[in-house]
Structure formats: C-alpha cells, structure tokens
Length: 211
Length: 298
Ligand code: SF4
Ligand code: SF4
Image (spheres, helix red, strand yellow):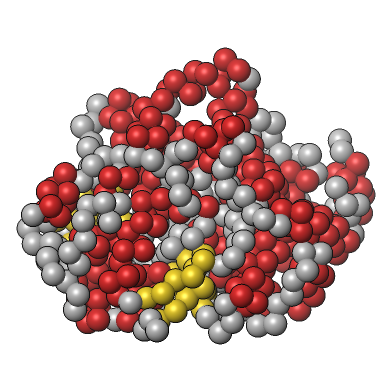
C-alpha cells in the first residue's frame, strides 16, 4: 500500500463517500445521484463489452463504502469523454468529470489496475505535451506502442504500419519529430515552473504531500 | 481591415506536418474568402485534451489553458479566441467556466501563472470555428461566396461528441444537432439522414482500447453507407482521424469493404468557394476524396 493510500484510509476511516467528496475532482456531486440509470443506458462503452460498472453503479458503490472495489475498478478508465451521460443526467451531475476524478484519485493512491492502457495513455500524453509545451505526435505514438517492451512495440508498429504510412504520405505524420525536431513553445522553462507551482498548490489544497 | 478578427488557437493537431494539418490549410483558405482574420496566439501551448486527466490533475490542466488566455489577452487584446479542434475548444471552455466560477481555483491559477510572468484580467470568449461561421456570420453570409455548389454529392454530417456535448452550438439539440447538415446544404451538397450523427468515435481510447473504439467507428461508417452517403464530413480532428485511418483495420477484422473519405466542413466550403484541391488540403486525406478532387479541377 502506498503511503498516501494508507494516510487517506486512516483519515477517512469508514467514510468513503466523504473521501471521494473531498479528494476526487467533482466528487462532491456523487451524493446527488438518484440512481435512475440514464447514464448507464447512455454510455457507449456499455454497448460493447466494456464497463464492469457503469457510472450509476460506481456512485452506489461509493455510498456503500466499497472502497477497494471502486478504486481497483477498470470502469472509470473506459470513459471516452463523450459527455452523453453528462448532458442527459436529470440531476445534472458532471458525470464525465466525476469518472475522471475517481480514476485520477485511484491512480494517485497507487490503486489503479496495473498496466491499465488508458492510464498509460494519459501519462504519456501529459508528459509528452508538457515537455515542450506541445504534443510531439511521433514520440507519443512510439511511447504508446513500446509500453509493453520492444517486441510488443514492433508487433504493434507492424500492425499499425499502414495507418502510419498513410499519414506520412499525406504529410500528416512528420517522422522528423522522432529526432528531436517537432513543435515547441519558446517559454518551455516558464511552463515547467508554472506547472510545478500548480502541482504544489493542488496538493496543499487537498491536504496531501506534494508528489 | 478584415470584417472579423480573432485570436487563433490552432492546437497541436493542426500544426504543420501534424495529423490535422490539412484542416488548417482548408480553414486558412476558407477564412481568406470570408474575410476573417485569424492571428495565432503567440507561443500558445497544448490544452492537455480530455485524456490527460489522470496524470495532470485539476489545477495543472486549467493552468495550461490559462496560459493561453493570458497570452491572448496580452498580445491580441479585445479579440475572442477561436479554436478549430473540438477538444481544444472544449478544454478551454471548461477551464474558463471553472475559473470564473471558483475563486479559489482562479487565485491558485494566477499564482501559478506568475511563475511564467503572466496574469489574467478577464478571460476572453472562446469560440469554435463553427460558431464563428454560423453565429458571427450566419448561413446567408456563408452562402454568398459559393461559386461551385457541390451538386450531386451526398454527405453524412458526422458531428461526434465534443463539438456537441456538453456545450454544443447555441440553439442546437444534443441528440440531433442540425448545423452541420445546414452547412452542407449551404454549399450545395446533400445531407443524408444519418442516425450515427452524434455517436462517439472512441476518442483517445482508439489508442488504448482499439477493439472497443473500432467497434464504434464501424457503426459510424456503416450507417453512412446505409444512408447512401459518398463522404463523411466532420468538425472535429479526432473524429476525422479515427473514422478515416482505421478503415483498413476494420475491413480486416470485420470483412467489410469500407473506403469512405472523411472530410472537414472547411474543405467542402473551400471547394465550393472555388478553391483548388490543394487549397482545401484534399491531398492530406488518407482516403482520397476523388469525386471532390475531380470536381475541384473542373
Ligand atoms: S443519470 Fe445521473 S441521477 Fe441518473 S443514475 Fe446516472 S448519475 Fe445518477
Ligand atoms: S462520458 Fe464517459 S461515462 Fe459518460 S457516457 Fe461517455 S464514456 Fe460513459
């Protein structure tokens, strides 16, 4: 168990709802859910085998104090940010952001499922775009394919070869970006300082040690 | 002076050599015809997109957008911000809304911005290019420069998620927005009925959960064929890429024979305004829109 996980489990004892309300982005909305099920019926990933638990169930589990089941769940990570649930919820819960917020919190606690591909994508994307201020699409793609090691990366690369070649031919994927070229902000330094400050302030506001 | 001026936020995908560079090409041509001046926000940074949520957390995400607001305010005072990417527009609007409604978040944001020598006074309005077209100009104005109506061409107007939800275009319904169909008709094309108009393409999960995303993409393309469309049109760079580039893989997996071009509204408009295939960025489509290319050269 990570320190933060321990620290929070102790702080909130048997009140997981309160923990989510105070620690997860938009978590204070969870108690407003009236369990109507509209979100579950609206979620695209529910139509294809995807969710273990749709939003409605996750919210119920939070209220029932099922801390381990929620934090370890794959469900939040399946959210595509389509905002279907968000615009349809009769109680106006910002469901998309609550799902993201719970996922993020699970990750901070070290409780997210191991090798979760969307978590990996989220990390890769953010690290990629904040490094130079803008996304380097080639490096992003590389870091996604090679996450499971060299062989897996080559296999994935081959499977995606036609996709990539099509984009290169259409001048929409610039392989030179792999060599350290690519798009950059001028004030990368300022961006890094600004983000460091933001992380510090966020940790302070939530009563956590900065990462 | 141009009839309208905006601080332009192209976003990462619309840069030169990036996955939506042809979107940018066509937007520039379209704006030139419509006498809209767009000036890139100097040194703008990535909006973080929706997918960065887990690593970024809350404040860092808003701070990234806030830096762009501050730069726009400082260098292009009085101008509204216009974004062409659905995710950029959504991310920026979300940040604006949260910061304006939460003084703690705003105070923290200002403190972080100080580290980059910036500050915010009033966050400018943030528009999607489609809003500029239909709200600031209006369909009538958009029809005026049409030189070559796209007659005999059938399009499926694929709106997708993030230009539609949660903010959407003013006055449009989330379940059946009609602005894209109207834009198609404004330039002389036929908008076929299309039941997958607002279905999610899987977004960023096309990378991390390809099987699930491709199952959704298959529905989107299939419905376009079923309704007699020859091409799909969209306002979103991620929708465009997802629906276009995985058709080969979907064909392999499902035994389909998809080969449907996926275009931006701005490409249609550029061609209808008499622009060349190059000015419309048609050479940037992976599945080439031959019919439109031939039409443009006539
Ligand atoms: S739609 Fe809203 S109120 Fe209904 S179950 Fe989902 S979150 Fe709860
Ligand atoms: S935003 Fe996420 S949780 Fe809501 S319907 Fe879409 S995929 Fe499901």
